[in-house]
Image (cartoon, rainbow, N blue to C red; front, side, top):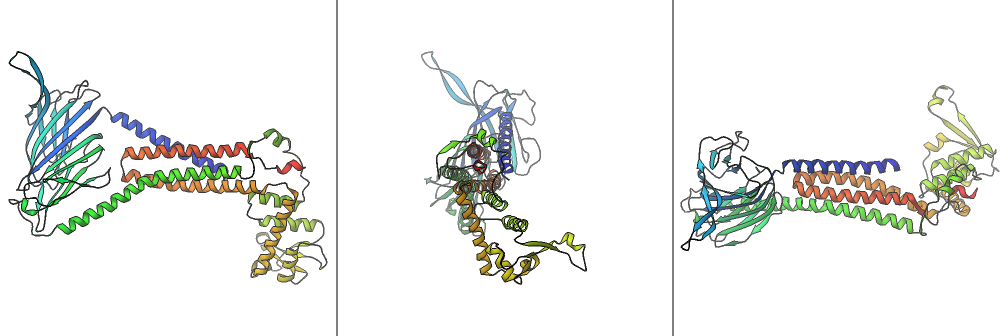
Length: 519
């Protein structure tokens, strides 16, 4: 079990390293460009529609034919009035015949189709994703513009969404995924702005994101602003305000306020649980390592200094014959393996030794009607004279369960174990332990410490299994970067645990005495 425990830990480390390497390679392959910033604003009007401006800044590591922007419009109405432009440096002359460079927006032309290599044109396709596959609710703006690796590219898309805000009988509501899930790479910085129409009254607003905990936003004069970093999934703005601000919007004859607040409460609970899982994974790994290392050091230093093992001396006694009786040898071995008590092997060894010295007789019982059954069902009878010098525990078995002269193993199995017999068995174990301690051939503190380490290693393997399950949950619920960080931290701590096990094998406690050294 000890060897298998070590190999399990090594296996977990190797699997984790492979997973880290795999995802690291995948990230490198996909990192031919980065998105530095997405700045998106929506100005909501009294009809419930919104004029949207989206600016995206790219940096390319290799040339590309252009970019595309996918807008998720599910539940936001029709997307129209699409216009695209690029941020460029313009040279302007002043009255003194000197020129200055100023930033300006160069418009692109909308076309029905274009080819790679085209420049300053764009296409607009409804219900289609970036791979030109049909997808309801997704609208794609494909911008043709050969890229340059020496400078950033900033493009701006303007469009109108006809139904961003909804008017209910008790509230007005905007629930909009301003940043959708259709991004190939992580967005470094996201800036979002929503401007509500006048008379919006008391406004409550929240930001939802798969990567960050739910955030309640501050609203000033009907303007909602939100920020996010390292976004690789959606960012959603949800706001509730006075329905009178949507004077020209169609009204839905249903209440919405209570259910919307209930939804926010549920999202908060789920997000908090997800956040706790992320933190719990790291905390568990840290606690596991601290406990493992701490108990190991305590076990090694409990009864002496930590000294290096003398393997040469150990090997020189490896083939020595011990002077112990069979029963004491079995007791030493049992205690060396399990300091909490003796096993049944000690009693069996004592009975065989007593038979060898003539103190008792042991005979197998062969059923008269079914003699073949003796091969499968082995029952024995133990006989002893009343004046035989045998251990008190064996004497009580013969007197209390047997007939005073003999007792069978079948009778012992079928008898109800009384508290008195349990006490006798405990006394037998204590007598064996006392003999071991008097011989001073096994250090009880060392055995206790080593068994504590063995049990701790098994528990560590069980905790590692829970850690793997928890890590999968974090991967499914969180983002990849956080998951990779957790894996790396846990791998480092597993190496620490393996190092601790190695130290305990290389060093022994200074107070330990080898069993064979007294022969």
